[in-house]
Length: 178
Image (tube, rainbow, N blue to C red; front, side, top):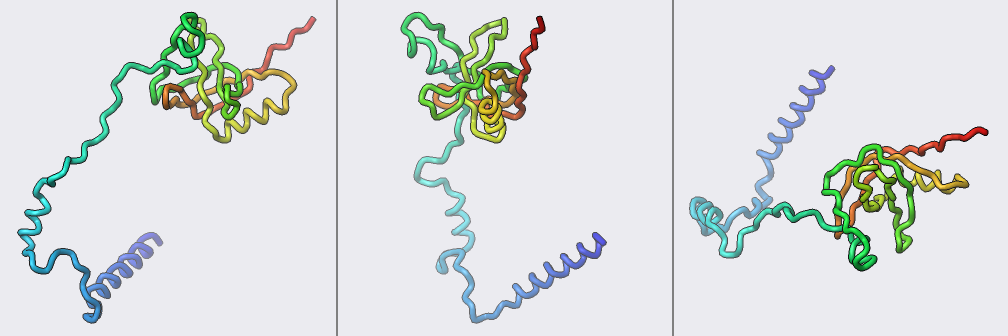
């Protein structure tokens, strides 16, 4: 069946090529080069470097990691420790923390719990997607502060880190029985 379909497709393509070759002579051919310029002269003109500056590809940013704009001297003078941002493309795996609103109230941030090593992880802004919506629904349906475990890639923009959530789960609090 696949072979018959392929042969039929080749037949249609061949018929289209034949129809294009016998196009009516009443239609003028599209202008592809100036009529008074020979083809070799046109080719040499096209291969000659242009008079203007040549386009250059973008170079990667090799600067050291920027500092989180919500920490350091920008928040509390001389008392907060500047915190390095995660680099674009880093991946956060199974980190626990809480979802909070940003200071302007327009975005949600993820506040990491301490990792017992550096304890200096600045919050990341959560990029909108269905996982964020599920987190919002879980918080709205709960009568307590929820902890989440998240996974996703990190991006960097204007001195802040963002995360695109790929995996989210609510961390169940241990039940104490007396």
